[in-house]
Image (cartoon, helix red, strand yellow):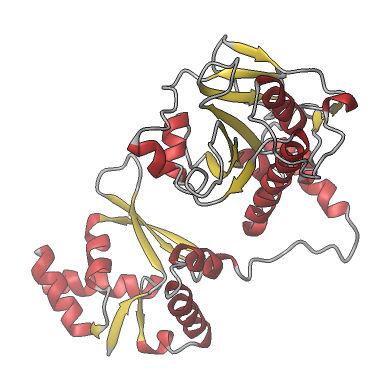
Length: 359
């Protein structure tokens, strides 16, 4: 009888626990805690082979008695860590395997893993009304406070943003008035205020006050943060700045200033700086604070709303820049991990989504 580990099993070390491993079964949405011995057997079973041969190999490679190796393999079969030909012939398994093959051929391996794990996740049943939403929110609030609206202030070096008034926006928003001049301090501060400033707040007795920006956000979560890499803007010292909505100011980050002439900078910002038809004077990096969005939206597909949130703001910046007559180019495809390293953020908590180049 031929056996093997499922194609959809992902093995990784358990953080902070030497010799312990986690095996995630993406297809069946289960996780297993394994010791080094079981993890080794799972690796040995990564290819189809006769069951007797797997037991023999486990005994030889791990220094186990044949009886002990047999017991370990048997236990892993019962939990579904090791499966048979019959399991691989199951229609659901075959669908997932075909999805992997097709998606991987396009370089979408990680997307395929997420799709297989989340494709049939049960949605919310609204057939009896939307009271279920209120019940969930009350439960969430009992589990943890909803108080994440702004990031901590990174330094005491601030550049105040102009007050948000209708007169701050250019009259020719989005009409592309000719892109006749380079980005200056006045336009930069106006863009930051109009795109990421707080227009209004709504008081809440049960959580931190809800925010309103010029761009909408699902559930008023506003997970998007903005960072400016100022390269060559008259009146603004080159460096990294966080657009802080709570302070209505640019906060200079205590990190090295971006060097547009360095090979690393060009490698990291490969999409936003190499495809423009103008000299880039500033980059607006848009990130998403995942926990802020996931406090309210905990379903697997809510990553879509994060991209919609960033997309709204990127479009707002684009139309405002065109109205100011400033060259602009929104881009996806920069090296996210490189940008996160420059900003000093943890990509698992706050990830880079898009960049808008300004000239």
